[in-house]
Figure 1 (cartoon, rainbow, N blue to C red):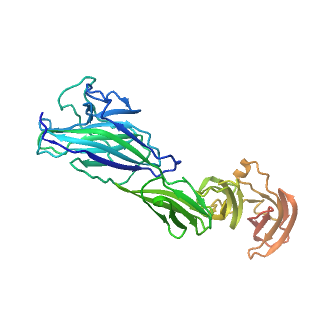
Figure 2 (figure 1 turned 90 degrees about the vertical axis):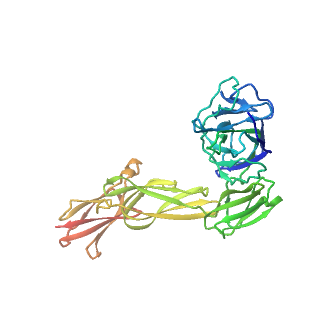
Figure 3 (figure 1 turned 180 degrees about the vertical axis):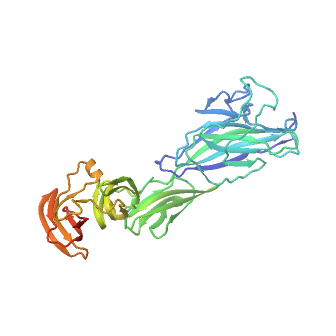
Length: 466
């Protein structure tokens, strides 16, 4: 089979990165050298899978094979079958989550039809092998009709040609564990064959911004770094929260000083200018007092006039303590099951505001939520009989969560009887009893409000005097 052209070397560089939390690792470069050490008598070099230079290589399409001084990954098109054929294989490589990678592929190409264009080279990353097919066995098969249709998730695709200088946009990875290399024809009108000859693949690690997390209080500073020989420019968003000052070789270091303590989440971006384009690395920084995120949802059904709520607080600010309080009660009574935890059940009869304070090394911040009960008008206080002509027994109805946590039954220390104009008609004081008996004697017939104080809050219930 005659070849009409022989291209010069092609250098392809792909940048990959994942912007997730991880620890700093020293930059390193590993090169797979395909110019020696491979068998030239095996049709499909990586089927079955083999370990080459410490890393598993697996064919997933066609039949990559060696000619002693290069690895052949051919591509072709046949007018007889009207099928495009490609070759692909995967390298199991431990890409560190949160790091970027410069992947360089050195290759040359030949084609046997001067009217046909050069093929595509595809580079991808994945966590599982593509479900395509490979051909050949353990013995060598001459000729070039031994490739299979190529299909796999691609992050970079280029048409090979002579004297290429290719700049590939920065790619954000997701912790994939496979590097995919493949070729594919770029022509479907005339039969032709293209032989793409790989000499080497180099993987260079680009570390993320360090440290991996930071909390900066007003007036304090933190130094961040990117381990790269290339020029770096820094930005922060939103502006006005951090004062930033680049330093070091090519500005790869940054001193960030907090100008406020109000609680903000700031994104630092290090734009690294490489010979193959700009790589943007990011790091989130917490500035000042805790940022408090709140969620609330009703839990279960009514119990003795109470509605339970589940309140959850979270913070990216390394909060060291939590404190829930009732700070705006509009009516009724409350029970906070876990006042010093980031999450708690709260039983409410009535409604109003509940707040949580979170504390970190920069200070304390409060956030709140309104909760309520639609469980009727008893508000946790029971009076019987109702209606009544004279004597009334008054007790406090505990919520289900209070019962489940074995909380001591609430005691009554004071009772007031109010008419419909909120005038106090009777008052009673106690040393702390669970059940109090009062008299409505001497009052006109009508509706009255009985209020009871449990030492923390007032609870109320309406009764009808006959």
